[in-house]
Amino acid sequence: MEDSWMLPCFTKKIIGMDCPGCGIQRSISLLFQGDIVNSFLMYPALIPIIFLLGFLIFDMFVTVRNGEQLKLWGTIIAIGTILTSYIIKLTLT
Image (cartoon, rainbow, N blue to C red; front, side, top):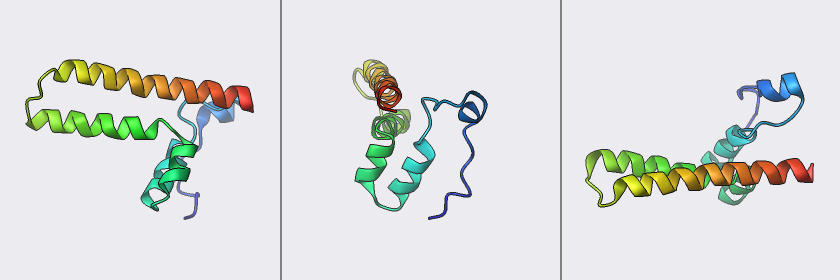
């Protein structure tokens, strides 16, 4: 799939550094192509984000016991994965 449709990263353009969201568009593109492993390697936080969004949608229609705590922990895990992968990316490049 061609990458010409993707939006440029303005943070990288202006500052010259990757932002915590760099790679998510390519990761989603790889996921839609069925390449789950490379999608995860491109942007590891995509998987927790998908599960969190899925749970949020599910929680709109079904009452989940301890739903608020699950939302909080899902958000913490997603943000933690974003920050961890970003720090690793910064230290390895």
